[in-house]
Image (tube, rainbow, N blue to C red; front, side):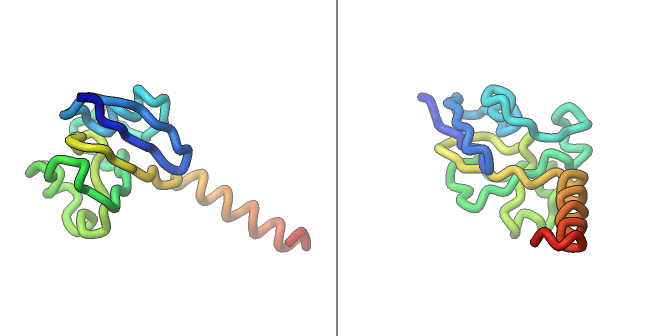
Length: 114
């Protein structure tokens, strides 16, 4: 059975098998999710936001330990979260890109563009 995973904000969609991790699904969809540990839940860089968690298996012990209270804010580790139904996952903005975007917005305000 093929399940659909949608990655926001790019609105990229991919069909995957049940049990596929969100990280593997993102690779199939050609969506970039930052990771450094190779999917071992060590770096915490691959966090995604999944408000409707019905399409994911419950967090495993490793994911619960790593994320703690972030689970309450709908964060999951894409390397650990396994698809068991249709899912919509939002990839948070890269912190470096966010900082650059904020700096450019401040510069534009200073220059009177806004």
